[in-house]
Length: 136
Ligand SMILES: [Zn+2]
Ligand SMILES: [Zn+2]
Image 1 (cartoon, rainbow, N blue to C red):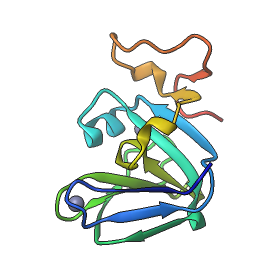
Image 2: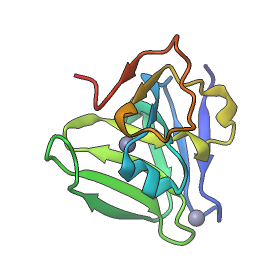
Image 3: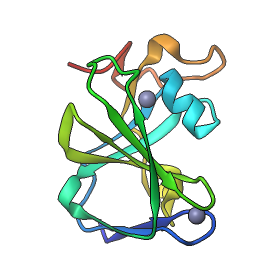
Image 4: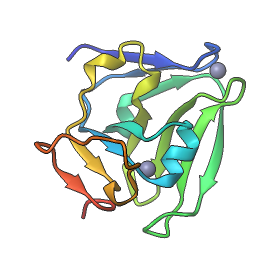
């Protein structure tokens, strides 16, 4: 896969991923839903040190997590586009919001998590692994 770039609506935040994603996961948890304002979040999980970023992010420290460890939800300080999450429970990865990529169509989700709180009209392909909460 070639280099991945992306950014926010106003252009103040830009990022680059220098390695391929470890996983692409759809998350149906209520917190991702609220942050995205949509039915679910499409999360690109990459090695944290593979992400370089410019521009100002605002951080919301989300303590409403299954592990009890905080998730830092980071978004553009100007336009509010959600860019990534950093989880204290998984410190080596960055969880990038797929919709902010310049070419988001290249990310096909391979796993669905928090399906216990998925909205009733969402159809999850039967061929994909599903986890009612976070995978163990
Ligand atoms: Zn912005
Ligand atoms: Zn989530």
